[in-house]
Length: 159
Image (cartoon, rainbow, N blue to C red; front, side, top):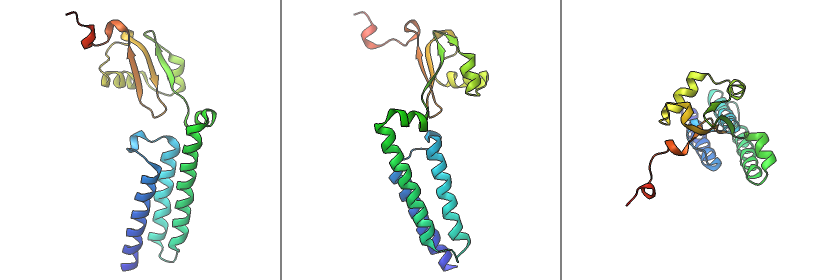
């Protein structure tokens, strides 16, 4: 039992360190490749905990390779636009000049109600007020309101 606990502590520390090295955020902000690496890391950690006959070094080496691949992929994506588009995708315009692009919404497999919910969370209740709305690569929606519907700024006020 003590061996299992020691293995668990070592793997717990290793996975936390690996995720820190990858520089990851909250789960909802992970890109698909980052989520896959996170799931694979958890699977690698489970095997030596469940079976004490498996060597810990196998899981540690596999985890190190996975983290290295993710870091290398991130570095390449930082410097190579084409690689970044292939691995991470690119933002997609779903509303332009207050008009919804139903083809893009269908391609993204997003229901109209889900889009409206996301817009309401951005304090937008009317699509016609939107200049541009984009589905970002992390799944979030960015919204730019038409100039006449944007909140007043300090410099907009007359003295």
